[in-house]
Length: 306
Image 1 (cartoon, rainbow, N blue to C red):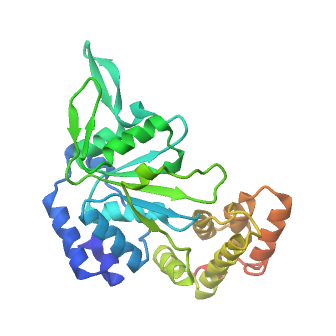
Image 2 (cartoon, rainbow, N blue to C red):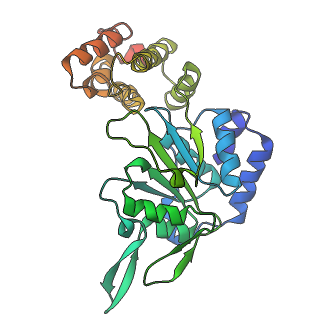
């Protein structure tokens, strides 16, 4: 099965892969949510993490992915939804996200009051995977909904309407960065409703896998230097020499893409990495890191094979 090929390539346990195949066969995709099937831009690389996540989801548990920036939390969540063949609802929490956004609100249609279903309601109804992004931003009103949704009883009482029993295929995957300004600890009751995976930092091996999949015609020399930029910046972040603003894997991959369009590698990486920080002193440090890796006279031909 093509959707599971990246699991087989990484040597994920055949027992777990078989479990995913059986899960896909057991639950059909409802027509109402078929348009929400996710196709990840890149496959996730990391055998141990994949095995832990798949085992948890097969057991009916929910996942909380924690870790610093650029560790692939959202990429993993998208890959899991794709592997299990489930539609996805993304909920990005902020301070004003409330129970109405998650469960639904009353609306007037066809001369009667009806419930306009929220994202959590539809996840529960259609058996979708709900990706709860930046879950630490959830306020008390939203957290009360999550407590009910993630509880072992798997049902939600909607005030004024019927009780919703969660579809047996429904799962929820929370993501949480730590180290960001404004982050807060999740309360103990909410964390207890998840199995937690602490995502490790990127390594040369994981980055080579990503670059190899996304840019198969890139030169070995260019891949080595672009990966080196990321790893150098990651080390400086870990040593608190710079903030995490310039540690942007999405930005680095985007820089590689626009080099293919014809922009010089130096200008592309300025847009994707260097200009993500606005502190003059920090920007100089980031520029120095980039200059040691990416020559200013490089062209597209230095990055991509003809």
